[in-house]
Length: 532
Image (cartoon, rainbow, N blue to C red; front, side, top):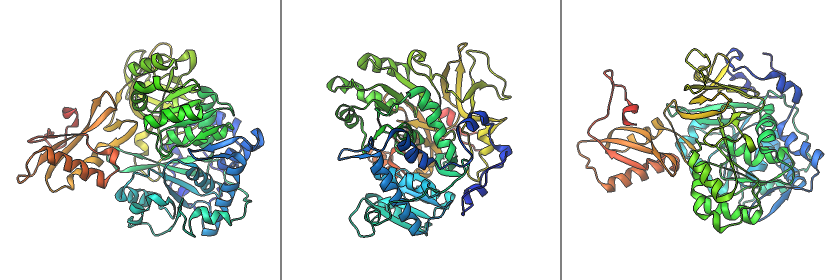
């Protein structure tokens, strides 16, 4: 496989791509029919959409104001010129830290427009988690919402340039943009230049950086969104997942911009607020996790949801009772989907009359999926096996030996156990690793264990996922205390608060059980399956 000449002056990402013989097989025909060798996806999402649909339509809105495509293009170009003035060159890594709002979208587009590589992070991440990302991605610049600078300021291994935005300081990005030139020519990047790094947790708790090309960004819109969501410029997209989750990035930025539609960006999208926003803004395309759909059910009768056209569920498995309850309460059929950070977005789904309650759906156009045994032989209908997939996108980890765990025999091996029926529908069975999917968040058990072990009262700890009706699963910790510590409800709360202070709060153990010892093999390896 030959890559096109890169526009990156900083060659870090291309130098750290896995060898091409470790890549999954790609749907090259699908890609070459749609994308030229030179492509800047940020320019396509703005300039291209303005050329196709005009610049006066609403592109982004929040609870205070709306922004047209022309207005967003103006701010993106000015921001791009500010970045160039700061010294950003094509290939540099630029970290973003902030909640979903129009300025996070503007900075994301501007970073890619100048040919740099965007690294979007969860605003809830703590210092230690940010340090891991900085180390892996070799981040050189950071654009940080002024309300989220405290943890960032204590990141010890970042030695680059930080610019805040959203504040009133003279050197705030929004102030710098006002005086910047309003014309910027997008960098002539290759379609296979890396434009973004998205991080996912591994079973060891060490995050993996997935590398995505400019063409990948457009491919997820032109496959899943075009075929399943079928958007028009009249649509208004909204949802709860943050941009740092590729589910949210696609749903709330890439998809609406690709098709000339509008994105409603909510900094807080808790179920009650999301319901009110749907009614007030007449949202047509909703994206959130099954947990949120369940949480909204008791209140759906109190709001007008008649504007909703498509309701997409992803981030965790969608239980059939949740599908049926939502349909009964709203008359809307939930569109289920499975995706992966490695694949960038959803690759199995169904819509309309093709929806089978309890099934994730079929392979999205452009993708091929199968259920196989350990030798990659297809399983018979109804027999469980490993879910594998290939298509226009695929896994490429940045300088990570785990590439060969996720990619094998040309397939992306998702780590999920599925069955496929005789009609090609896929049905989820279980996770094949120790990732806990809770409320749509992927949580690595060993990372939570490491955070707890830093507490003086803990001698040993094991973390597993426990089934939960509201959240799908919750994090549960089995704790062996030191001889001087005493089990109590007070200590449970202390340990929970201790965990929240060192890692993202959504990862904390919602249940803690004190035990005398942990199950282990003869060689001393922890047996989590016995705790499950």
